[in-house]
Length: 231
Length: 191
Image (cartoon, rainbow over all chains, first blue to last red):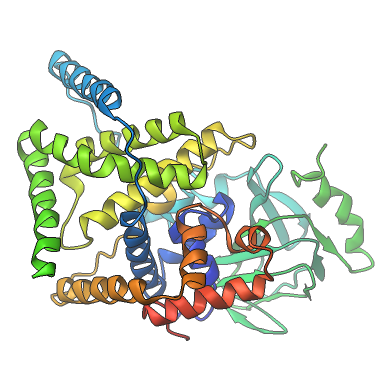
């Protein structure tokens, strides 16, 4: 049962296509598990189509564009006729063996284990999936069952999506599929439930900052791996 | 009476899609081109006024996708307008990510592909028509300020935050206008 969903603002921006790609990645991953939000998106896309249908068109002559379009289509058809070889389907990968969401398969080809994990403490690992130039850092965090994550604050917005396992903090318990959006004012100390390790997808607009006396030593490392401060 | 006139061309276009999927009917494609390309261009120009080349590129790209993907369109899961809107939205995102100052390697193809409701539901078709009608009728009755914000987000591709900055209004005002509008259109039900 999913209890934490993206806000209606985030869903609207996603359906409209105005949400940054990194955030859209989290929404998309959430949607794969959330029927309720899928329904919401379906309606928001309907709204988009009505607004699209009502756009004011200009009276520009489109004959040139039309000619060039049909030229392309016909060239494509000819190519299809010429090439006797039918395009080979890419080899089917048995994704069902892995619980990797479709939206993340552009970054994770086979298994979470194959990623380049960086160990920050005996129970806490992080793997960067992608750093947007001048944008957000997209990463996976992996914390052992029952372990505390170091206390940290966010220096920018953070979205967390639970992929496997569960964790809790002062505000609640988060399970598979839950979408958690925290802003810069938030300071928290998550604990992973005892039954299983917890893997989360996180998108950080700015690096997190550890506030514990010892874990503070990790801050320069964390900052170094964030696109905003790597220069 | 008015309704009958509205629905018929829509049905013609769905038939055109079938004709393209089944026997590559170019006459059908011409009709769809004439109907959609001006709208597609307007959709792009709303986000980037004056960018005619970009608008032509994206409109052309969407028409190519319509031609190549006609067989994947399922009338029972979305109206043709909704399907074309999602193609246009995705093509615009893709164009901007490849051509903007901050290029991104996140491939949008992976992000919107799965938002198809695959649950077989015998009432889905009827439900969908009801939702469509509610949204269509509600949209015509919305106050101008609410409609303006929706247009900023959907057509101009602005986030809530950017819309607030542009209209010099607090973010909270923008949020509540969108929420009010979505509530009236029965899209948003508070959980």
